[in-house]
Length: 287
Ligand code: G1P
Image 1: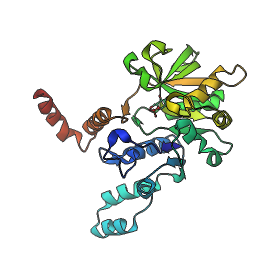
Image 2: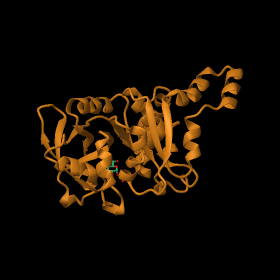
Image 3: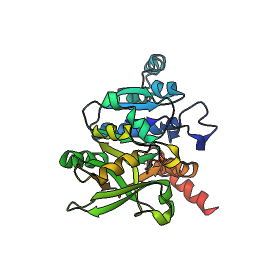
Image 4: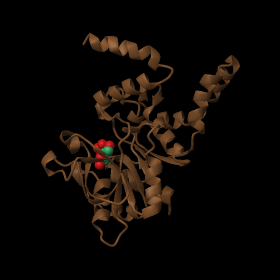
């Protein structure tokens, strides 16, 4: 499931009539990277939790017969393939969140769709480089341990207040830790570590029962982190484990990070990089 019901206020006015998940990162909406990441890990059923301006999102993942036939007539097969790719990616469903009451509340909206199966939650503000697979490892760990799995990444201690922070213990698998506690967006001095939850989770449907009774937490919102903290603290349950990610992650959550993500991804692209890289150097030299 991909929550996409936030108000995107940091990007106003661009997000006045468009969800922030539709903002282009180079030439693809941010949410398409996330759906592609899910399908690359073998997930072919995607539920997007939507808020206002849902039409942009559902149109993007639908076919566009007029555009497709025009491109077909012109023989522009490469553009046609790009148009068709997003509608062929996965079986995509939409549910409305109603009032945006937090990530935990958004996850709860997936309950009926998820049924009895484990599921992944992918947040659109974090883009994971396709060359550094993370979700596949998380799915394997979930199968192996039956536990909730979160993606963790070391961040600058000055930034930990922007994330869920984890207290952890080592396990005998390299890059996998046992999560002993979680705090949503702690002050630097209260953070149990500088290991931040980045927006990837693999969960069992048992999380829904906990979310049902999770009281609003940080920011007055129902926090997924608080439900996971309850799981981590339960000595009789399967617990929570973290996969520590050391690969390339692009944050698109605020304007500066969003611009950095576009610059990094464009510079790496085969079709754009050769022209852009020398220009970036020239530009940087003038700063
Ligand atoms: C959410 C989660 C937080 C997590 C973050 C990752 O916060 O609540 O625990 O660290 O995503 O991006 P948000 O950034 O949506 O406020």
